[in-house]
Length: 433
Ligand code: DLL
Image (cartoon, rainbow, N blue to C red; front, side, top):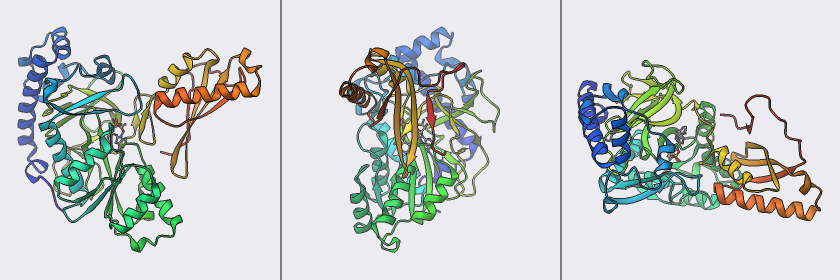
């Protein structure tokens, strides 16, 4: 099994700790002097950069959240002048105040490095053809995989997401060996191959690098047997760098975190205390080499557990388990992040609609579907059908503009959506994770 960067990926953990401590000190100093937000937060906590010497001191520092990024939209947490930024991405789903991330030239080099490790973890090398069916654009999936693929010298096919017939044609004609997309799209493609009558033996596929949304071991088995490939789980988030934060190796027993760049902690999402080794909790990252947007103790909201034993593959980096879920209400639909509050905001802006609603998420033919049932105001419900249809159309347009996803809207009579006595149940997620 090849390892892209044996020096770091198999490093003695004591030596790694030294490097992490040194890089953390540099990062803390950088944010203190270059980002007023962090300077104020540290001053409030009575901390100067000298107070942070080792990763054990991290727990004294305040957390950073998605809201902090939004409050400082778009570039307020950047630690370098814009002339140093060579790339911007933004997290999917939200319009207006989305979270914007910036990369310096060195950050792009780091990203390519961690993606080269990720692809090598999946057994890819310069002889491979990597079909990138993650979306290109502001989403980090497409370009992240792209730079990693080029770095290992593979033949990169930047087809981007969608257009299934074209995906299949390319897969067969170009001889794709590694497929990169969301796990749900991989299953969708598997079905499409079956229906198209293409014989699996005409394809050269051997592995897939799947992530950007939660998926289960069952889904993995299904993808592996339908496509006859090794399905590798890859994890990341835009704020930290994009894909490339952690990746499974061929052993498929946890995802190696690129700890020389991203320092992980596990906290209790309610008490915010750091939990003992091996506990399940919320994953928090401090970036220790990033220049454009360094983040201190960024709360991912993803729930998992860390294992520190050395892996059979020889890598010594800590492994995170497959994500169990999230500690907030964010949904991931066709790879797009969606908070129910985004839908509510649109509803509250329209007087014809009552904010009694239900969001129904399902997975039909391996593709996520999104439906909104919403009550119409009594007065409007008396209207003619054509007027109701116009209202439905307007609501659908407003929603699709706001969330960047197609959604089926169903108007229902006043008082038909079940009222709840406790916490309102706004979302029914029928997908089996
Ligand atoms: O999804 C980056 C990415 C692209 C990762 C391609 C892997 C492959 P965001 O759009 O910012 O970034 O969404 C980040 O997606 O906090 C998790 O909740 C979820 N997520 C990402 N990878 C996985 C995974 C990209 N392998 C959010 N398993 C994260 C479960 C995942 N959830």
